[in-house]
Length: 287
Length: 287
DNA sequence: AATCAAGGACGAAAATAATTTACATGACCT
DNA sequence: AGGTCATGTAAATTATTTTCGTCCTTGATT
Image (cartoon, rainbow over all chains, first blue to last red; front, side, top):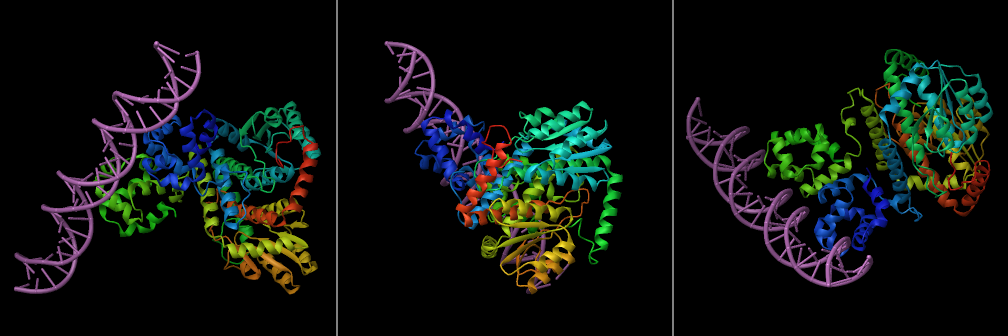
């Protein structure tokens, strides 16, 4: 879907002229997006037909289709394409963060599988109890968000970031309960163990993680997020946005599935919250 | 920047033919983005020159520039333009969530003030202790994220979601400490009180919130996020993405300010985390 | 009320520009 | 030597813009 990402993968299969075109696309996407085929060709020192062929190779039918796809992939900036460069200015940092978040959300969206999603939603909506598991700063935040979203819908839900607790909760869970596990890396072996234990007790397990990983394999159903994390340790991982988005999608679908009951619970929560604020109740479930 | 938003504002000043074009842009952006000027014109039952004039009126120099801008504004979908519609299908829900998140991030990015940001970053980087305050599901998540990001940089940081604690911590804080407060609505009066108390003790206070609100006014420095929350109570608020983005930007800038020390702390944390996983240490600070 | 500019919206057709196709060349490999 | 592939040139096609003339609307004048 993201043409620049596609291009990066194809880099090796390109001829010399085509690599020169690609070079320009990466280094100056802003120019490329606004250029005509002639301008782009002359800047890359190739002929226009070579550009056309280049577009075809990337799966576009025409140069203009290519340009549209290019424009779509460069929402804010393209700095994420040069992960080696350390961004220094405030402006660059902001642009990079926003762009990466957008990219992560986009990748998550592209990887969605409606069938899986619906199965997961059905299980959650019908669960007698939901457990949200995730450890480490990021996944425990996600587990917390799962709790935040689902309790508002009137579901019984408990979040845990503690491996020991997770194992015990899994063992204590009963058929009809659902465990939702979050792992960015998929390599959280204790979490995988808890899921395996839950399986023995016929508890449904849903994992938000990468498929081909210990956690992914241990779960009954995987809502896949296949984004690698990058290596810039100074930067917070953008994968969080993808996970958050997945949680929001699942929670919203569950809400729609439950419909009336959920609205009532939400109304009650809101009433309580608003009562302890000043009078303006236009705000949704604020903070 | 967003041409579809611009267009919505201009709607009244358009002639009949132009409104017919706009109509198509809103109802079938996907078609418009891929269409030639002739196709678009014939579908709107106008002549190509009218389309060209339409583009000019919207500030584009040519039809192709217009198409690029259009492609850039329709990252995933345009459903947010009709906020009243309740989305029902899985596909629609996913599209809506992703689009809203993107929009929120974009709005946050647009509202950034470099000067303020740099002042905040300087204060945080030099703080002897940082307190992150935020209550309610959403803001306490943000406070948690502030802690997650900053402790990795070697800063001393404590997060609290409890109003009573916040007040006490504010009273116990000393000059040189910094409090970062998060409030989506800005109407969290207890939080505002804690900030006011901190001020008396000459503790720097930074708020991520809306400017013209009790919390915004109580803080020394506001990193503004002026997004209203929408009223669909079934949907999680997209403002979270904006807040998260702001936290990431601030944290990254602080990291760059601290530079060497931070990398070392991160390396140590990572070493510990990796040691308790299996051997693959390519993963960043995973879960 | 009828008439008459003035101005704007619009489309037809011409002019221009962009893009693609068809074909030719030359480099490289077998 | 022959084939294949990458590439360019030039022609053909297609897309876009410009120019110009018509028609409608509006508002003033008779």
